[in-house]
Image 1 (cartoon, rainbow, N blue to C red):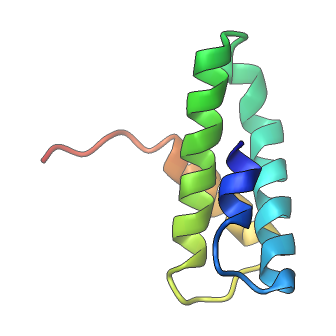
Image 2 (cartoon, rainbow, N blue to C red; image 1 turned 180 degrees about the vertical axis):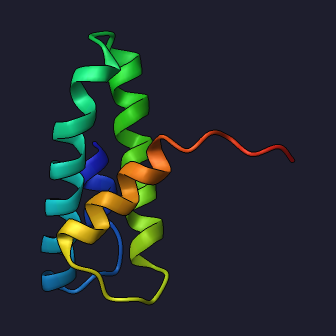
Length: 82
């Protein structure tokens, strides 16, 4: 489902390839810490997909490695107060 979310965006094929690679690389690093509960896995995957998409829409071209690191940084950033 999360990769389907990424694929639903308006990205050219080259950008989509980078987004999928960054998502997969980041998920590989995050997955062991998420646990085994399906709801926790889905929530983490959706959060990661949304972060990757948000980073891709900031207008700056990124390589998969930089996008992966930026996504990991945001995944583990503490929530901010409103």
